[in-house]
Length: 103
Image (cartoon, rainbow, N blue to C red; front, top):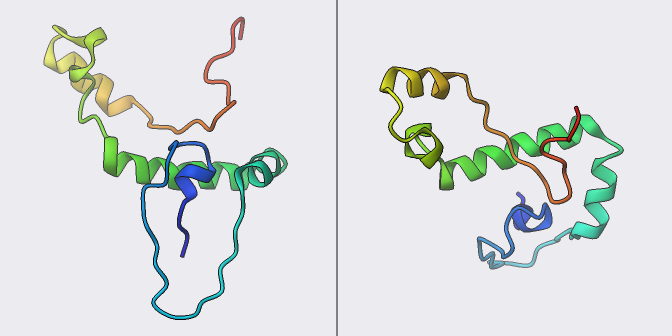
């Protein structure tokens, strides 16, 4: 299995789990400075890893509705429901551009 992926991807500043070996085991370690440059060379894998990270984050930090965001506070419920049904949740890695000016 994988441990520490949120930290190695730059999503979490600290490890979110402790892993203790119950018996002798073989472990492979991949550091952020090794992984991140390679992900740009493999866009399909970067996309798949991003989706897996999004699912893990969503289970911890999900916002049920945009109604809870100050920007949408006071909007009619049918409007916020419409927005909720059409939003896409996404994870951005450190150094990813979320929005590009002029694009």
